[in-house]
Length: 638
Image 1 (cartoon, rainbow, N blue to C red):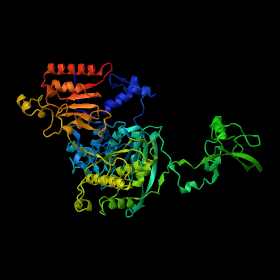
Image 2: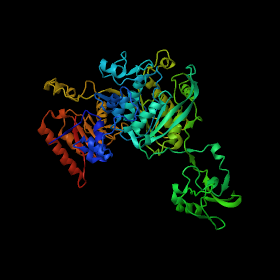
Image 3: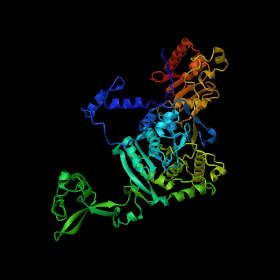
């Protein structure tokens, strides 16, 4: 019998892309390989195009693409129960680690599962730290790719303006992360990216490349409430920007409610309520008959006369709606006839009523009505008993507006922020869920950057930004519960931390480094790293399963064995050192049946006959228990 093995590989980005390509263009993929000539023909390119094309390029771009496609090896996410809140019930996550590694580790579990991503990455100021994704290169390779020599091997490098690759280093850091983030977005998903004027043009170009120019939904100019850079010799800056992209071209942003100023124009009243009106004739661009011939037709005025859509200079125009739509609006009393002067003569002219109730407006690209950064910093200070714990926090008001215009938010939707800082996004998600009676979930990702010694944060006991973020979520959650005692929104979060693997994917037995006597005395050394905990092993195995959330419930099935676990009611992980007949009998009785059983190869001590007999028995018992029902499950081994 053939048995599957749990693979060390988590992601196969290239392989996934080839599969997508095969679905679109079957003739271009042959035996798993891309036929590029056939692909060009599918795209209508029958001759070689010129090598020059319009795109943004920089030193290190190819390496950034390569990094995005490489799998992550030797890393896992370690569950930290002591830092978590309501870990048994929450569906929120807080993850500590390099977000490049985290995005790769989450890719299988959350592929296409995130509804909205918001990020506020470190701006390229010349002083801020940026992530160094070349820490596995040799010194010479790193020098060539990035032009820096003093920080090799560290996660962060200082991106000085004096470096030749000042923009290139920052762009490479962002490019690979945005490529991975796209894989996590739902097809109906949206990404919002805060950025300042130093890199907004470059950021827009790389997002056009990654997400597609057709998916660009706009650029918001946001008032920060403070002016910086006044000593630079140029203009100071009082604004930053938010780039907005959708995963697919069909998406559009949700309208926002009307404010008091907007409502002033709805100063007419009928049985339906307050309304305003506008011409039924299309005005502005594309208003001629030839633009939409089916919208040029006669309608009957109150005197029984035909009226056509004629423009102010006598040209044939068009109505705003097709005839069948007009007829329905007329029947429903949405058409208003008023006398007006046309060519010196009083005539009837049609208008359309627009009611205030339930109406929204398109989001403006200028956001100067929100709380600024200073107030956001004051709010965080108030939350932390007056201490200045975190600089440059984003306002919750801003995140609330972003959530407000995110289309089709529903219960259970996941919001991701992989530069989470002080965790403003998590705080806003909880408040938005409360105020809009919706059940949103968050995933916060933050590198554990150390707080400088001597700062109020460090003096108060917060050694890293992660500790600040986690504590802010705890305090915001408790504040919400205190002010709204009857709410049942999720204010908890499970904490995970990027850590070294728990599993010996390349067995030491195969390498001849363990003998049978060692295996019998310490059997875990065959499969696992010294000190590895069962819970962490189960989570590491779950990182290799598609569409399995890390917030699912993990149960110890103590009636079966001391090391047998059920994850999310679907994945059975048996870490017992020996598989007995009694264990097999109990596994076959589990109802509902897990979709996958995972065992240790070492539990059979290389006895193939025993393994075959065990799983023939398991299969027979499962089929017997299922009766006439068809059951489907798989078995894999560590």
